[in-house]
Length: 82
Image (cartoon, rainbow, N blue to C red; front, side, top):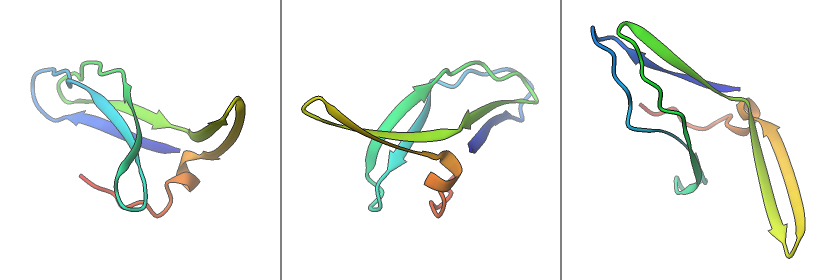
């Protein structure tokens, strides 16, 4: 599972404009992205998010091939970024 927190170290609440999760190919190009609900984060608090599974589907004229993996193994070896 891939998890992350949005941590508010300030003294007032804030709401991020968006929370976007992107999947990148081996060259770093975005191949998929989606948005998570961007709820407010209270002062001195954090908002936790989980991505438990990665699913890939390919549609070939109505025949859909599907592969899935837990997010941890699907993302193993991906560099962390700030």
